[in-house]
Image 1 (cartoon, rainbow, N blue to C red):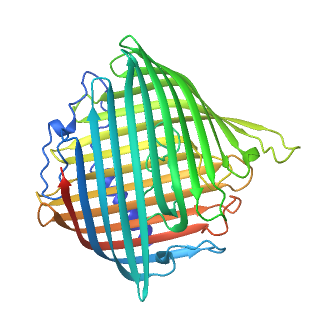
Image 2: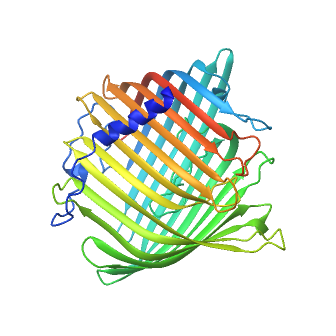
Image 3: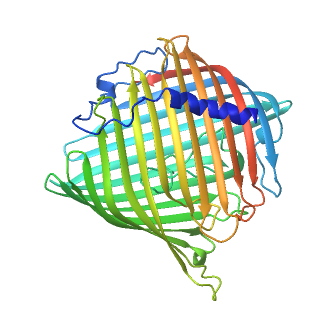
Length: 451
């Protein structure tokens, strides 16, 4: 109970500092200029690089001590959890990483590349665990004609852990923009290579209309053959028409499917029908406050082809999103968002219909001290009979004090809780419920080698 109250306090801090009077009318205000043009950075540590610099290379490292309080239930099977799950108590560790980014822009093409490698080590009594990770992301936009653009993207991630995060993104699809997430919530050992490949084509028709076509393939290659590899495909076509400077009419169709590689006959299908409006505008009382929302729908087809006598089940679901952003003073930013969508996740046969709420706040207290906090809650349901619900709560708060341009002290609190209902099919090596909190205190450094 104490840990849950602490997690809620993190969310309340963000809520209290949100702007009052959100009911203000949406009239008359233009969108503010980009934040980097009007809010100079005040901190000494980790300052952003020059946006005009085409490349950067940053070496980072940290040392920390930690304390975790874990309550773990129903863990069995052959899957090996991180040692942090096996006990409550103190431990310490270190990590180091190297991150490179490149950006090139020409008359007809633009190219972006980000890559990084890192390794984290943990020491528990006489036991030492080393966890490496690597990622590579590349994107290319090429102008085929005056109003026609081809887009290509590729992402590859090597990770040793699996995460349960079930948060839909703003478009209502899976939140896999970052295939590797927070190491404090990646707790179950499953060594894998994760790939995401995309291609898109956009054709403009005048200043207000555009037609777009997109395809995305995701693939998870588990190095341990005890786990089935996972792949997903999605394709979409859409037409958008800007009605006003703030509202856009969207018409489109999308198709998604996902399955384990060894059993394509059990693939699940979802059809997205995008017939709605997206809206984004600054609130009238402040050019630093903006509100946006979007609507859509999804049709879920769940026909288990491995059972010949089974009847197909088709479900219609509304999806959408809403977000509120506010800039407090010259350095603080507060955000709140609601997303509803279908989430396909490796390890599960059926997609989850998910509602998610999030709130965050961050900024500088002094020139050397910055604070940040975020809380995310989701409630998901499998579209099948029985007790098939899942809920999760993730919260974190961090304080960082700059000793100089390249070195800072930090303290972080994390809370992570989830629970699956008994009828949700779950790998026996994964825990059906988890209640975990922890504190990390240490020193971190970031040295720009190219900037």
